[in-house]
Length: 233
Ligand code: UTP
Image 1 (cartoon, rainbow, N blue to C red):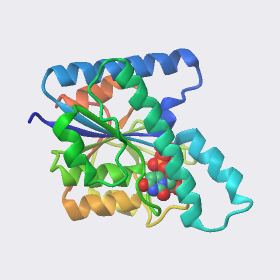
Image 2 (image 1 turned 60 degrees about the vertical axis):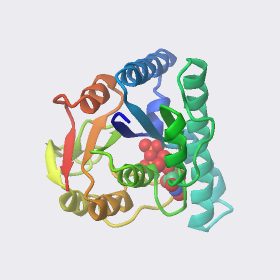
Image 3 (image 1 turned 120 degrees about the vertical axis):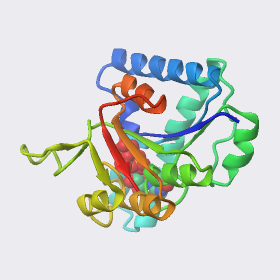
Image 4 (image 1 turned 45 degrees about the horizontal axis):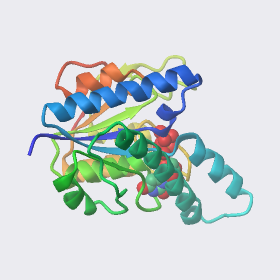
């Protein structure tokens, strides 16, 4: 079997402001997958919840206090986004798994017959970054690509600190120090701390790229130099 690429696609990537950008992004992902499959690659894509997750969690928050229940709503949104891409890829003729796994172990069977498996969240208390790291560890991938909507891991949150500096390389334990220990349902850091802990346990290298620029995804999966952050075990 050729190399299996595990890629977490942040949900915000599916919803750029303009429809034109959205169409271009999906077209570019389709061509990355098509070219990768032609070269013998397989793909596990884990799709984030993005805007629907945030919107639905915020509707529920007025009535639901349990984090477990709010996470369950978030997981449903990730699976909605996963279904969107799964159906687009199938329509394009790609050999995509018809089922969206709800547990990581289903990947083994799905990858036997299919070139591409698309999935979302699996269980409360984490985000899809964690699912991606678990998937990468499960299939013993060389690395796990986290495609998000910032260019790098930064020294501080760049949305709130103008002096935040991009980091091109660091270690997993350093990333955990930067991210803090836990997230609220619907909250976000570049990489979910639960995912970082799983990566530490599984000694999994993370590649963090700005997935809005699909050339960076392409470069990272083909082993070329890319703009982004390499997080070494
Ligand atoms: P995301 O993985 O989309 O969170 O899950 P995110 O880090 O905010 O990613 P973006 O914005 O898409 O880039 C959305 C929410 O779904 C629940 C959590 O509440 C999370 O905040 N979730 C997701 C889970 O509880 N478990 C999962 O396995 C996945």
